[in-house]
Each structure stands twice: as structure tokens, then as C-alpha cells.
Amino acid sequence: MAIVHMEGIGRTSAPDGQRLVLAIMAAGVDILHRCGGNARCTTCRVQILGGDPGPMTEAEREKLATLDEVPENMRLSCQVRCCDDLTVRILRRLVENPDMGDAGPQPETWPLVCP
Image 1 (cartoon, rainbow, N blue to C red):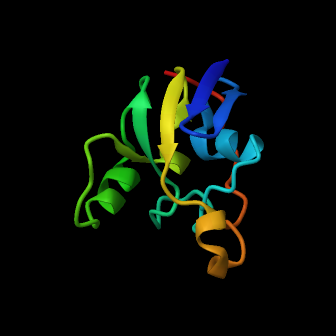
Image 2: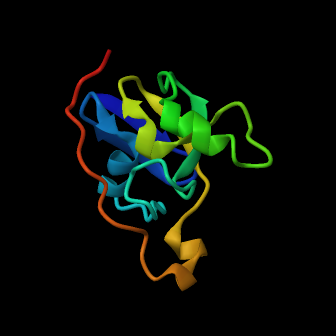
């Protein structure tokens, strides 16, 4: 079980291997995820402030490369597995973007496996 500390929000626990975006959503936080967890957008981006988020997926690396500026610790929460305790800063929320109507479609659940 991983503990996810969300800066300025609180903390939650996540089964080992759960997508970070799903752990954040399960805590009741309205993180954006417009593409449904497929690394096709960047609305679910977070900054990793502590812990090991594991390696980037190729899809994540390619999508982040399309942004003008990407801090070293920025990740797409839909591509991060919770295999270690993490401290994150959530960068995009529905409350700050109400014109979007909703946070996005439900991301699929991955098998809960950590390397």
C-alpha cells in the first residue's frame, strides 16, 4: 500500500500498482484527465515532490515532449503506478477549469503490479 501526499490537499492510500490518477480521484480530488488515462493529453500532469514514481512510459515521454517547458519532476498521473509513497502537486483541477464541464472519462484500471 502506497501513501500519496497531495500538497495542500491531504493524503490518501493506494493499492500497490494503482494508477496515480485513480488514487487521486478516489480521494475525491477533481484532477483533470480529459483523455481518460491514455497519455494523449497533459491535463493530469503533476509534479513529483517526493518518492519514486518509476520510469516514464514511452507514450508519456512522447506527450510531455510536445510541451514548451517541462520541469524534470513533471509526470502524467495516468501513467504513474503507485509503487512507492509519493508527494505530489496537482497542477490541473476541474475547480480551476469549470468551463470543461467535467474532469474527463473514467481511466481504465491497470493490473495492480509493481516492478
